[in-house]
Amino acid sequence: AQSVAQPEDQVNVAEGNPLTVKCTYSVSGNPYLFWYVQYPNRGLQFLLKYITGDNLVKGSYGFEAEFNKSQTSFHLKKPSALVSDSALYFCAVRANTNAGKSTFGDGTTLTVKP
Amino acid sequence: KAGVTQTPRYLIKTRGQQVTLSCSPISGHRSVSWYQQTPGQGLQFLFEYFSETQRNKGNFPGRFSGRQFSNSRSEMNVSTLELGDSALYLCASSTTITSYEQYFGPGTRLTVT
Image (cartoon, rainbow over all chains, first blue to last red):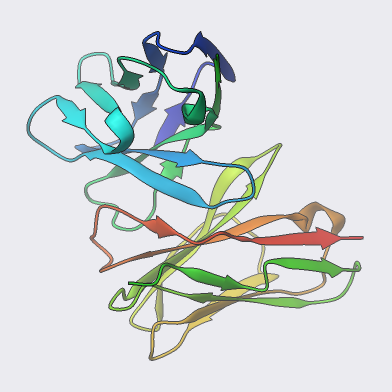
């Protein structure tokens, strides 16, 4: 079975400060890891993915994520937060042998205050 | 290229009725997945279709069913609606069943009264 944990329901940061949204996972085999963002009344938008290679993955809108195999983590980061980054963020995982079925975390609400 | 479209966007039904939701994937995408999103349960995988065949299924009762047509468009059906079926139903498409990224539609908000 595969699972994802996003330990923080809410993350609050001030505009211009760095942000981190945490994600840990459990999966059999090599993981494929994803971050998605959801704005109110919208579907999920893909931000970035880790499949293989460099542990630091760069994605859309200045976001990046660091894959740590020993800690089974895939934390989302951004050096300087914007008010417009305020949204609901989901981490997802699937095993490389489980095509198509992704398991999502419960989501973390990011609020960036001016 | 147009994104994933879902119709209708909003739907209100009463208990016991059935409902059909539609999803049109991005042109060229052949895999369609369905998810249910609720405040209490988060995002839960319903099923995935590829080449008109169900390839993966989540842990939902048999009241939830789906199908995919030859043009890759997909429908999901929920029969004998319950209050707990109220949710945002999201459709996601990808090029193939082994593709990494999924592209999500805006969802259909179903309210069961």
